[in-house]
Length: 320
Ligand code: TXA
Ligand code: MG
Image 1 (cartoon, rainbow, N blue to C red):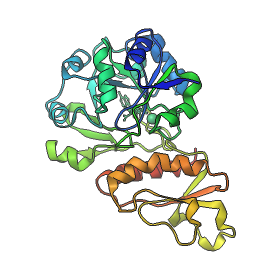
Image 2 (cartoon, protein in one colour):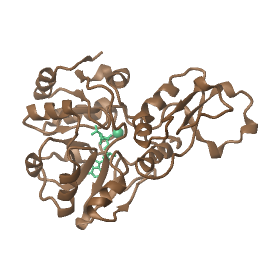
Image 3 (cartoon, rainbow, N blue to C red):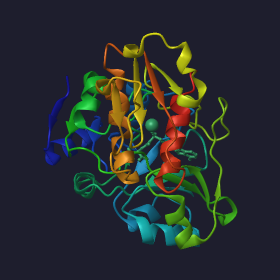
Image 4 (tube, rainbow, N blue to C red):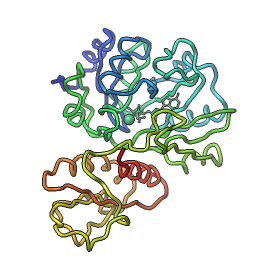
């Protein structure tokens, strides 16, 4: 098993030597390696069992460093970076040759993010290269929001897990592209569309949810726990004979027809940020309850971070 601790100097040393470290960010834990070292990047794909057509996000800690990785920063991208970096926002920018094609799966854009977690920032400060880091989960599974989640699934494959506590945002960063300088949201995430529009005006949201996405990695069945998960609206309660085998993941109110110990309430007070923070750990907790074979869920109010939560719920209910 990987060592877990808060030793940033040790994490830096491992990364300097081409090794892999799980790092906390405010969104989810990332599986980090030197983005400029092909062996390290190969190691990331290998550890996650991630197909090579699915590009990685490159993490760094200053705009000055970003300028060394991208050809140019469109004006609206700069405005968003100024407003929300460090934070749960990833910008797709035209890459410079220094970023390996392996990282971007051959695309001419690179996904750049400046995370807000103090441990991630301290680590990046220590390094003279950026970190490629996808979420630290096996490909297609729910993202980890604690060091323990990472250890449970990828502990054997990582050199060190830097423990920064529970992630405060809980869902992945929002991804924005700038083709022809026009901002477009490609993945809903921890920064709401409303917040983005406040800075750059109305934006198109183009979420890829097909099984053959035009942007890699936006696969329909992402975020799936291993149990069957169904929408409340798609089931007929009359067909259920044994309610003890069902669990629920609900927004603010448990169902009266299910045992309470089988249910996970995302936020009792109906707070959307709290719901986002709890989403993935709730799915994991339910996934691990042996008595439950099917999880019933339903969409949360579709505004603010609720849109990103609903996107994850939609994908989790699709079986590949
Ligand atoms: O919050 C986050 O973004 C977390 C933390 C660790 O930073 N990272 C994360 O990475 O969620 P990952 O690899 O699980 O998701 C990155 C997504 C993938 O769907 C990938 O296809 C997309 O970003 N992506 C990366 N580079 C891209 C590019 N150049 N063009 C289009 N999509 C890209
Ligand atoms: Mg992921």
